[in-house]
Image (cartoon, rainbow, N blue to C red; front, side, top):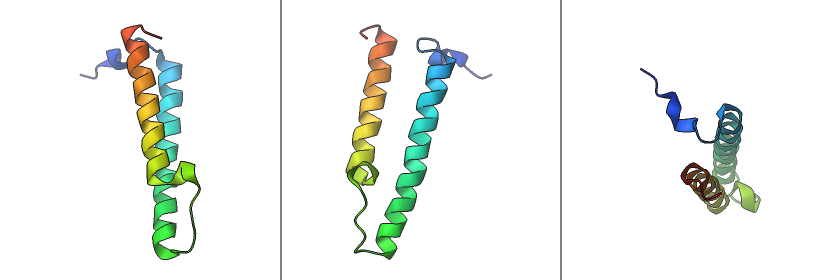
Length: 72
């Protein structure tokens, strides 16, 4: 059975917005990395690079963890 409690602390809407934002970032970032592999002279923007994606994922997951623990 599906466990709906994984977004009980932040709410369904906030959870869905964060999930859509992160999944869109991963899809666009993947396309950017493939384009960069095909056209090595094309330099993707910082937010689209692997480091930018890593930083965004880390920030969002830490924010969600703080919210779940009630520290936010």
